[in-house]
Length: 552
Image 1: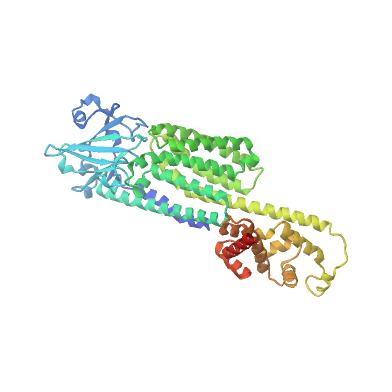
Image 2: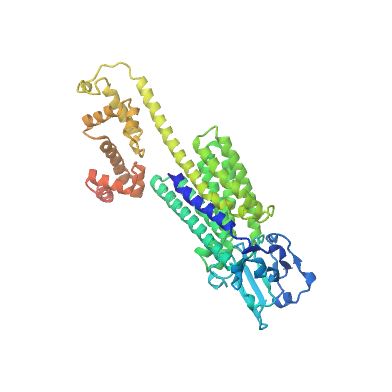
């Protein structure tokens, strides 16, 4: 079912990328190779100084994207649009309409565009995370963008001041109004479709945690949330949708959530793969890395250069990717199917994430696939990691049932040949006539009072009957004749008796926790059965017995 749920959103996202890539080249051009730039390492140059710069002070970029990396310098860009005349570069639909400069990297701190208009006055537009989104010249844009007024600038020369601590390896596109609006629509569709998928999956994980009380699901939720927020901040979606006016937080949040992503991935995988049980040294080293990440997270909020955290987290990424994958392969011989699911999900996501890491390490140039591929892999990663947790729980349940079956088998082997007891004579013409009922009842007592098998959620009649070497008909007849109950009534009675004991002996324990611990699938189901069998609500039962104990 989960596979089917994910098929449509993944196809939608892939289709969106295909549509975006199919935007007409005539109406959207990469002008980065023709842009000239000048580095201002001391941050002292003004627009007037730049405007009067000598030609030999400018360098032509000559590449499809900039390569300024994490430099602290300010970069002035000189963009001459005279060579991109509407009639020759774009389609006829573009003539006389608006055009746009789009800087295709969302995590830029500050962009200021300057030009001198027909009246000789300097005009300025702004964009970037340093400014509240509402103050941007194009507040609706996903990427920092500027509207170009051809009639207001006879020289068609524009100067852009780029001041950002984030990586500055990205292209600049010159787009017609048609291409700009088309890409904006596609970007919105992709973002909202992807967010909807992630939101539904996060709610599903929360539901599973509430139902099972398995800490793995809680760590899994934290991992998914942090990795989603890290990607959102890195690509500016959080600034668009969540905190459009929180400029300080936007400039620090990226590394904060990347640190949280690493922290929770370490804790999640450590618990999922049972490092403490199978790999004690790896468990110790994982704890050290987790502590290092936990310490680094609050430091990301200080005025420390972002490149420090980028390099630190990149090193940990490589350690985590390689070592966890290797340990998963090693554990295949010792564990079950859940490790295979983990390896598939982990491998797919980090295969694509490697391209992004290599981009941030300056090894790969800017490419939309390198940047956005990990985002496409997140739903697939979620699917397989969920399957891994689910399968691990099923295997744990199966091991418990196997242990109980082995214990029952040992009891059967020591049964011997005893004379039929009086209790058996009642069933001479029933399905139980050839059964040693005294021994069966003894085994039933062990399962109920020692093993407390009724605490297993979802325990079915055939499974319980098999432990007693009975078929479902025989077990049903035994419960009806001996206890006057059906199977569900018998199991619920045992669970409620256990709940009563916990309500009195553990007064600080929440009722919902007692409900799940006694084998019920929900608090509502527990409360209904408790009220029906005890004639009083669970909370009233606890309070009543608490008063009796205090008055005794």
